[in-house]
Amino acid sequence: MNERARVTDAPPPAPAEAPARALPDAQTVTEVTHWTDRLFSFRVTRPRSLRFRSGEFVMIGLPDERGKPILRAYSIASPSWDEELEFYSIKVPDGPLTSRLQHIRPGDQIILRPKPVGTLVLDALRPGRRLWFLATGTGIAPFASLLRDPETWERFEEVIVMHTCRRVAELEYGRQLIEGLPQDPLIGEMVAGRLRYYPSATQEPFVRGGRITDALASGKVFADLGIPPLDPATDRAMVCGSLAFNLDVKAILEAAGMREGANSDPAEYVVEKAFVG
Image (cartoon, rainbow, N blue to C red; front, side, top):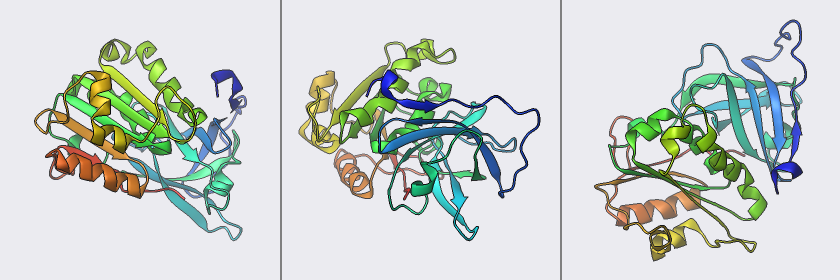
């Protein structure tokens, strides 16, 4: 799906006064973009008290029929300096939250608990030369935050983004993000010549097919990019996808001699542990 084909709900004119916040921890939706029939992104106001590290997630949600909050963990896709918060979501027809969340429009309110946490943060990685972002589907969301954070480019010489989806149209959010980085007024000059993008689709013809795990295990990605295999002395990685994907990638990284890190014990790779439904 190209940029013209996506459907975007532009935010309405700002009201003279802020709307009354009927929900607990309420934030107002400012923009919604439907990328495919399965994927959408949205932006909301940012609580003044919220401070987070790029790559972290927060709990967001909506009330059910009885007014009880339905909350799920969502990675913040916007960088830590952004005045608003961006999220990227799948649409699950029977999902307790996403079946409702996909219908939000600018001016609506959502619940946002301003207590960020997460493992996909730069502080959990040891210093290195090359940083790998390995994602499937909406797993690119935390990397959308980190890619726009100057600290990422200050810490690493090169960043490689591997993003795999089932269908080509599902890559569009990431493609537009990546292609816009060189024009970013804050980090554009830092990105030049240092970003490698490696998208693939598994269920449709595309310039590159197959899974991330296959490309890593076979060495295809290293041959395609003209770089050496994973080296725990120089390579660092962040992983975000389904539970099965995360476990498969962990096995590959550990076979290369890389160890899983944490905020309290930085190492060579980290994995996201929160999932949306």
